[in-house]
Image 1 (cartoon, one colour):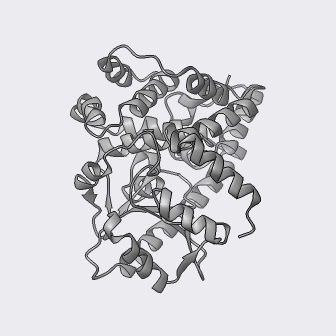
Image 2 (cartoon, rainbow, N blue to C red):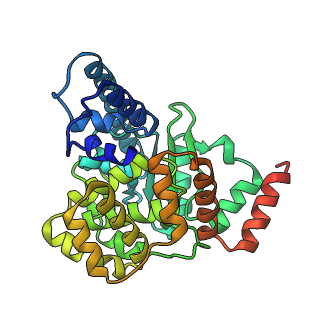
Image 3 (cartoon, rainbow, N blue to C red):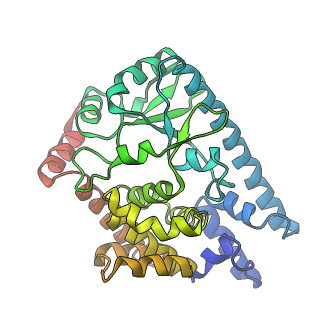
Length: 336
């Protein structure tokens, strides 16, 4: 049963002792792109073939961490003298801050947040430093669509190193039904020592993860997403946990935070998350979202349906239906 694997993945309980079940767990972790995180949680606890598998995962995640640290330095150099201090987001923040959510995490791109007033300047400076439009979104339509409607520039890939950077100016698209107050969160961001970048404060890291998972994305990697929520919540101090719900309300993100607390409560049996969830008061998570999360976690025969439902839901959350139909039609029929 896949839900039972979550506690093993974060070290709350040992690996399965039955060899067949252990093999199933390892395959599950590999599919979920969390092998490095499993290795970090169980360092020094295993031997034999499993030790080799986990050591290989550590090597790959260590490579990603070095890449991220190097690229953060290149971004800082590109923006040097501009007065712009970018905020690293999501996995980039977890790794650079040295959080439990970043231990062993694979990182494929770098996400940064800058004030919208500086977005054109940042693009210009990154272009001079070697980043350019990613080929998959280099068409005229995609470039115009991102700039008019989205919460970020079109992705930029470095011409030589091939690293990808996503430059955000808000947390969700302009057309999204939910509009969390990213300015309040940015004001509380904390500088990272000797890195020339900032990251959200601990409560806001959890809130942004909840927003990204439950109000933006389609939950493509449920194991990694839910494990990160657990680690981010576990990293909060007692005072930060007690004030989390108030902070979520303050930045207009109470709905995704409720869903995130439900997930941490359900799959990690976290007592503090249960307390925080009860403090919100009576509520019922949307049937579609709840059913889809349970289906993806259980990996039963309804997974394709759940993925499709979450894909449709994510687009419905991100833009009005009229605009969505026009966008999908143009994507399907455009030549450039």
